[in-house]
Length: 315
Image (cartoon, rainbow, N blue to C red; front, side, top):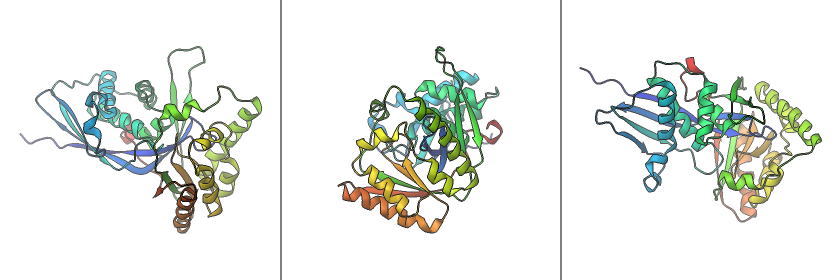
C-alpha cells in the first residue's frame, strides 16, 4: 500500500491592531509558517519546530501548534491515537508583534480541520484559539488570511467569549515595511501600560478612524489611511516602552509612507505604502531613527497574504 502523501499548508504572520483598530483589525502578511503533517503508528504526537532554534529548551507540551491540534481534535472529533509528526518551518520573528503564537495555534487547528470529517465554522475555531491564549485579531488573520475584522459578540456580563471573523478585500498593491528593534516584549508587559477606561470622545473618534483605516486598506487610499491611522487607545501609552519608537513612526511618514503604527503589541512597527519604490527609503528612515535612539533595528518588506491556516472551503 502506498504511503499517504503528507499534508502541507502555510499559516501567515499578521499585523494586528492597525492604529485605531485595537483588538479588531488585522492584516495577514506573506511571511508564513510552513506546516507538514505525516501519520505515525506509534501513538506519538511529535512537533518539530525548525522555525525556532530555542524550541528544544521549552516544554513541548506547551507548544502552540500541539495545543491547537489537540483542541481542534476535541472540537472536531478527530482521533489522534495513531500519532502524527508535524514539522514547522519559517522565519516569523518571535516577540515582535507579528502574531507568532496565534499563528501556531491556527496551524494546529488547521491540521485538525484537514483530518476531520466534521465541519466547524471559522468563528468556532477562533473562539477555540482565543481560549487557548491566542489574540483574536492576530488569530482571525492567521486562520483565514487577508484583511479581517474580529467582531466581539459576547456581552460584558457573559463568561463565554464569542467572536466572529469578517473578511474584507484588501488592495493587493500594499507594501508593508516592518521595522524590528533589537528587543522583545511580552504581551502582558504591553497591556499593563494601557488605561482601564477611555473618554467617550476618544471612543467615538476611534470608531470612526477604524472604519476609515478599513476603507483605505480595501481601496488603496493612501490619503485616507494617513488621516485615520492615528490612535488614542493603545499607541500613546506603548510609545514610551521603546526608545526611538515615536521617532521611527514619524520618520517612516516623512520618507513617504502613507502611515505607520505599532505592529500588534510591538515592539515591531509597520509602515504602509502603495509604491514599491518607496520601501527602501522608508526602511532606512526607520532604522536610522532607532539608531539615533541607541537601538539597532532590522526591516522586512512584505505583502498581504491571501491564504490562511484553514482550507479555502472553510474560510
